[in-house]
Length: 99
Length: 100
Image 1 (cartoon, chains in turn yellow, cyan):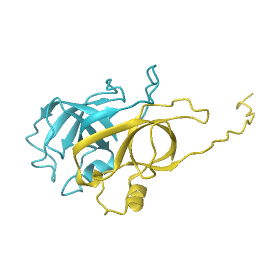
Image 2 (cartoon, each protein chain N blue to C red; image 1 turned 90 degrees about the vertical axis):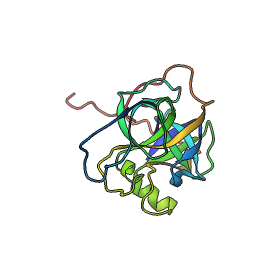
Image 3 (spheres, rainbow over the protein chains, first blue to last red; image 1 turned 120 degrees about the vertical axis):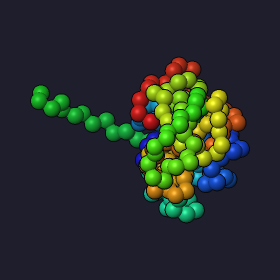
Image 4 (tube, rainbow over the protein chains, first blue to last red; image 1 turned 60 degrees about the vertical axis):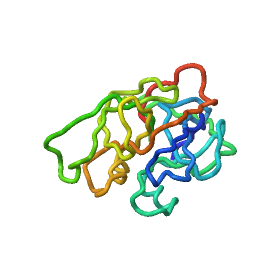
C-alpha cells in the first residue's frame, strides 16, 4: 500500500456502473517526510477522505474487489482504505554497501 | 486510475478474439493539472466517449474487467467522462514525473 496525499476530486456523470456512488479522488504518493513521489493518480474513496488528508491507498484489483464486495468484475484498481494520523520514520544509519 | 484526453480513434480490421466491436480510442494521459503525462496510448471505450473528451481510465488487468466478455487482451479502458476536476491541494510547482 502507498502513503498518499489527497489533492482534490474528480466529478463524472457518465461512468462505468461499478463507479456509481463512489467518490473519486486525485492522490499524490508521498514519502515519510511528506515529499511528493512520482505522478498523481486517481483512487476511489471508502473512508470519507478529503483534500489535504494523508491517506493509505491500495493499488491491487483483488483487494479492491474483496473490500467493495460488489462482484468480481469491478474495473477499479486503486482504493483509499485509511486516513493516516501519524507517520514515524526511524532515523537509522545504514552503512553503504562496499564501504 | 488516471486522467486522459481522447485525441482520436483507432480502427483495427483484424483484432484478438473478444475485442470484435470494441471501440478503440487514442488517449493522451494527463496529470492533476491536465498537463500531458507520458506517451499516447490506445484504450478501449466503455462509456461512449469521443475525441476531445476529458476522461478517466483504468489500467492493467482491471481494464479487461470493464468489458463483456471480460477475459480480453486490453490494458487500458476508459471508464468515465469527467465533468470537473477540483484539486485545491496540489502544489504550485510541477510534481516530479514517475511511474504511476
